[in-house]
Image (cartoon, rainbow, N blue to C red; front, top):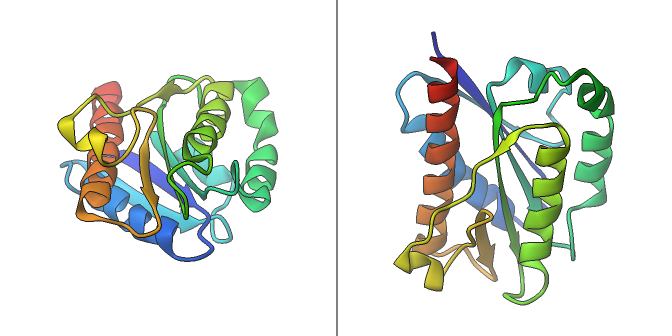
Length: 168
């Protein structure tokens, strides 16, 4: 039996899309996992139910984009049914300023994941985190560095590993 991890993201200037590629690389590095990567424009709400894990990404606009928030709002019935409860979830974001609200954006994504009863998967402390990322999730600012890519890869891998563990 394989696990499916759904990566849904909104990207405006390309930074989040670049981080998403690294997240997806991390998901793909785990044997027995099927990756489904979608922009918020391509994603369908029923894919949330089919997925065994979820990773959300948004540009930092002092919080998540309205488009991603609206898309997630349409999943409100799943909050009541609990169909996502117990599945692992993670988050990533990118913006132009290191102090422009990256962590606030991650916390808003975390709130959406926890609101569904999902298990949040962050990043454990590492020396790399002095330069990149947050324990809440993967981040980038101004450009996507190799450290940012490695943090995003690690996030994708961790969520995929948790999805596989929970499947067995």
